[in-house]
Image (cartoon, rainbow, N blue to C red; front, side):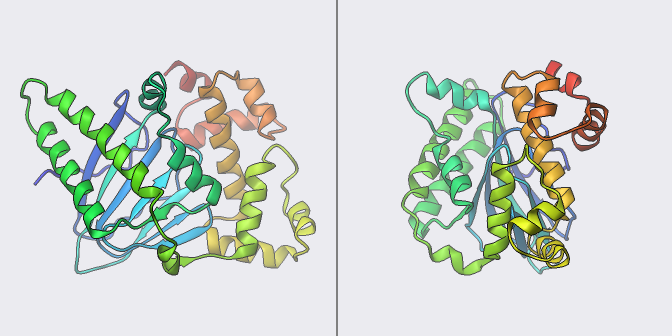
Amino acid sequence: MYIDEFTQRQIMNERFYEYHHYRNEGPITIDFHQHAFYEIYIFISGDVNYTIEGRTYKLRPGDILLTNNSDIHRPEIMPSQSPYERIVIWLNNSFFNGLLDIGEDLTTCFQDASNRNYRLFRPNEAQLLKIQNICHTIEQERSHNKLGSRIMAYSSIMEILVLISRVYYEISDSARHGVTENKQINQIVSYINNHFSEDLSLECLADQFYLSKYYLSHRFKQFTGLSLYQFIMKKRLTIARNMLMGGKNVTEACTECGFNDYSNFLKAFKREFGEKPSEFIKR
């Protein structure tokens, strides 16, 4: 069986895509994180609650999650008789840019999932079988060095992306029964995402949504898994990183993401991503 050794790495080493099939026999701990690429997560087995931007999904085998390059997320893995097994596909912007040249934008399902703030869909049995067959082909091609194996694996990644994009728009809302969420917290998360450069202090948000500061703090941590301050800081840093990727300079990213102190921004960026903004730009 094709199984990768799991690491906590959240930075791509490959230029276009990475494919990983992970299997952990016992529970592992993964912190909240966000990454500079798109991710397809295919759940195979285990007992997992997956939190993304304030919504928590109780996963079933065959569930698929789509996250983009600004989503804050984390799986909570509970003890189970079944191993925690999943397939994770990372797709860089450069992968999609090549497809734009032929008139295809395959980021639309990721963007739609983000706009709806609902990242889970459940393929039916026939759809899931097709996806599994393509994954099997990818793993076969990546496990040997035959002539053209890299090309075959790359083309299969493209095939699975097209299939998942098509399946995504055929889903029903049946998967919503396995979601834990709070309407007010969803509204606050949406507000933060749309007003990240403005005053997002606890006092300001409590006034904006007519809530007590204690209630807001307690409920926000309950449903997102992060304190209000932690979530806002991660969100601002993530957007700043994406701005740097898009060509903004460090000062512009700092100012436009609501950081009032340049030196604090530099320290926070390095603490979150492990490198200074200037080092990130060079890399």
